[in-house]
Image 1 (cartoon, rainbow, N blue to C red):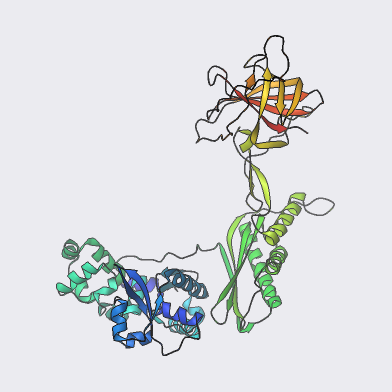
Image 2: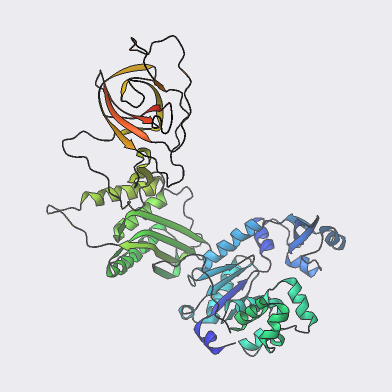
Length: 546
């Protein structure tokens, strides 16, 4: 193993060889301790064993056997359906508890966890003390564990899984491992064994070119990662936060108020760090570490960047009060961590001369309280979009999201509004009387009521956004334009209306602002250009003016 790799990074591997059985016994404590367990699933048309407990192993039952063969050997064997999803969730819970040692934690499914402890081992008294503490906490959960520390994540996992005897140093221990530690395909492992290459040392002393030519380049790449000739890092299961603060306790704390007091102190430290960066947090995440290894997460979000510790604590209290399942400290919390995963630029706030902050901050505080209490998606605001399609100009988003950069349009002073306050989604079809097919409406019927148009303004032509995916989804209309017969000026005819044609997508709209005889104002549009796009344009009412 290269000296540079060994000196730069250190990894702790945790291997849980009996994870399914340990999880099952933890959830079913009434299971007899002397009952052998086997977890089965259907493979190749037969029920086969995929995991066992320690007693079944001692009785000679191993994964890969069919259930019939296993019960012929051990009649009292209990068969349980394998649940890999539940095992994965259990592994996630264990990894949550490992965050106390380092934020660089990665899963090695289905039964392993790898920690990058570079630079953090001194906080626990060294590598040995850190590994012993992890072993003690996992043993308290009644889980079987094998662990190892090495200079690469592959070497750490290989030692945890395959080392059977002590060695004078790490490099010698790795070279004694079987080629199965490379975790290659079964056919390659068999081929290596037939060639007399049974250990990592046998493989490492051979030239790379013949090995790659005979057994594949992935064999050489796996070997280089294992022995440290190639750089190898883990990918953390969670992105590293911008800022991280924690407090450890010699004696676990049992009260929520004590936890909130610690969160307040950590929020004060975070405020100082954010002020140095001229930033504010948009999201604050608290993790409470119980002394038995379990964790509890709390998170809040703010609509604007902030570094006010009082606000953070107040929202955390709101979050705790809104929990359906109250926080259970168990035997107490021995560590509390505050992370700021999302931060944005925040300059000094402008205050009014008579005191108090600007109204935008007060609105943001209200949004934060309501969002924390009711849920992030329950409080929304409209954000403007860069489009001229009326029904798509405003998009409802969670109020805690950043405001859109596009500004809202302001009406011309002294002029009537160009857009109504109320829009129908989708637009509602109407029957229209017009002098000519491409002329303004003279009369229309909507909701079985006739409206005589006394004033109109338009048309305002809005073409479809042909460069995008089909954005217009209008209903199949029934009404259509009615061309009046000579000497006839109403729609009260006994004959049926001619059937309307369904509008084609991506047609042009001509909008009219109209006012009827009673002073009511409507926003109507004709869908489709007469002659060039359709021979029978359809009409809709899209909105109502106040």
